Length: 126
Image 1 (cartoon, rainbow, N blue to C red):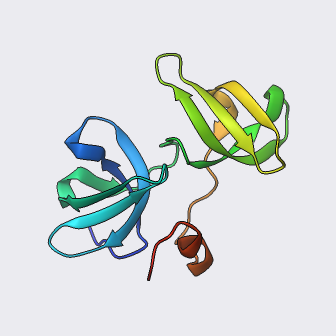
Image 2 (cartoon, rainbow, N blue to C red):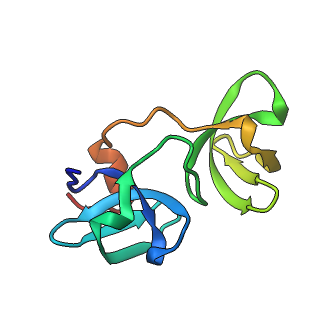
């Protein structure tokens, strides 16, 4: 796997069993990952990383959500997760907040290589 600064990845934080989305912020023999929830993990071996898979969410993930179960999708950020019931709390870009949103109402924005502005926003220096 070819990883570089700014690569979108999922990592097994602390070697656990749950994938968390983030970005590579340092490369070398081991990697430093800044996760969507703001956590930074250093010295991550490559076998704890994978290329980001759409639908991998954590607190801090940017998402599109059908507000109130409607037809239209609105942009927001996941602010809380009830893992047992697969429900998510969302803070929408327009200031609205919605709690206990079912996972089937949420999609990931189409991922691409991050822009310099996005990396700066996430605090990633390139």
